Length: 239
Image: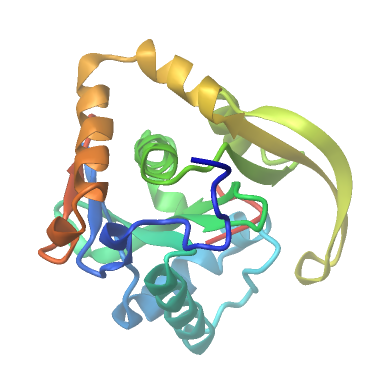
């Protein structure tokens, strides 16, 4: 059939419907809403989170967060990205973080994420990441997913490495919002590596990827609010 056409939207119609969501054992991942602006500004703008990003200011004003949300929704609608708010199942209206995949011109996906400090060390970001990686590899033809971290971001580095990401390049990055130049590393996870890891995981994980494929092959299901059910810190390219 020839090489993939990277000029087309990366994600299928299912993902471009704002009723779309991902489910883990403890989380809902859904489209961000303007109503999330105050919460996102409060949680992402604290130094513990914003210091590890290139584009989250401190302080972070609600109007800036609203602009980010509207831009994210436009990007989701275009099919060029999937940026989702992380919420707890008991409180789906309250965002506690963001995670997303952004299409690149070479066909790869760029990963970004952050999680509010009160929710660290509970395995929540790992749950969100597992479903997001499945979303990227199952519903698109991306050969790999890339990320970039500051070298002193130990929690995020450990998380990426536990999911099979490896360092592809070390570099120094100018971060005007952080007030300097910082040592960073680029990471990548290729499709083969992700598939090999998935084969070693427990069976419910397979049900999540099967569900993703079944729904991505049926755009109609997305228009009725498709859900992907699965088993059950910050990136520099922050969502």
